Image (cartoon, rainbow, N blue to C red):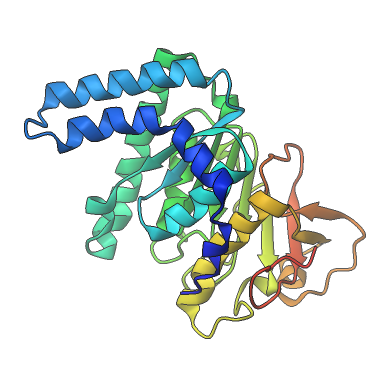
Length: 288
């Protein structure tokens, strides 16, 4: 896996993380204490809600990123550097780190529970769905859609990073455009690890949606969308050209003058369609 994302490390990230330390410590103390019983965990959650109640009014939006692993940290670090946000990371590693079929089913269950948590958090803190941006990769991309669906499609912005293909083509819980107010999909291993067909309001097919420059394996391409999204949060860039049909997005045969920025901090409600763009083989990946 390309390690170029470490270039995002800077003092801004440290400062942003420190602003969220109070909530993190409330959780950490309960989790790591010898008692670590249910009552202490519940109290930690309540303390966290109090923290968010104070800070959600100041932060421009809240963010949910599926999974706590190295790649999720890659997604979160540039977000914290780019904007004042309250970052919620969902740890479903126990459910995800097993047989794929089991993980697929747990994707649905986990999404349902995250939606319930957000509903509770909003009631406890006064936050609104129009302040959320939910991001997920692979199975987590479908989970992001499930979260939004169970919240009535009211989430402001959902980004699905190369939604997983196996088991999802005819799955009724698969990602769909109506899962949020604005839904965006970035396809980087289309037809292999990721879905080929468009499933969002806007679907981007960088480099035709497969065989990403700088990658020699399907797995590398499947995860390259994480780097594209991370870079877009900091620099914008990644201008896609509108395509009339899927074949055009897959081959780059798109002649429209209409363009749209891929990824980024801000949702693009009202936008729709298929978009093609090219990227560099290494950081910076954006060609503008």
